[in-house]
Length: 139
Image (spheres, rainbow, N blue to C red):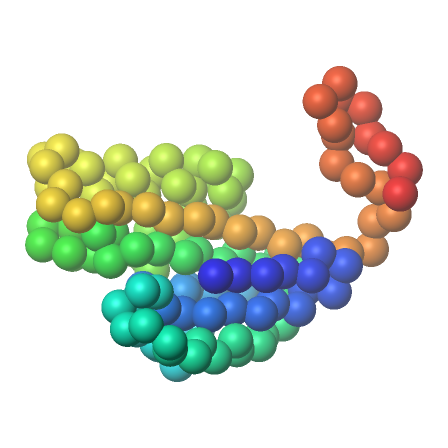
C-alpha cells in the first residue's frame, strides 16, 4: 500500500510480501530499503508497519510484484531498464518492462507480473491536471 501527499512528496508505504520498490533519483537507481511484512491475509490479526520516505522533484519510484522477478523473468534487469527508460513517460516505462518480461518468459507467466511507475515533480502547482474535458481546474 502506498499513500503519497502530492503537495509535499511525503510517502507512507506498507510492504506486505512484495519486492522492495526501486527509486530513480539523479540518474541512479537504488532499492528503497524498507521492512517487509507478510502478505495481507496470511495470518489473521497481523499488524503492519507504515514506513515513511520523502520524494524529491523528478524522482521516479517503481513498485512491482514478484512475478516481475520470478523464473525466466529474472533475466530482466529491472533496475537497469528503469535507468535506460528514464526519458520515457512512466506509462511507456511500464509497457517496456512488461514487454521485456513477456519476452523473457515467452509469454508464459506463472505468476502475476504487475508494476506501477510513479513520477513526482513537486507540489508547487495550485492547479489540478486537466479533467475529462481537457481543461485544467483551479483548486
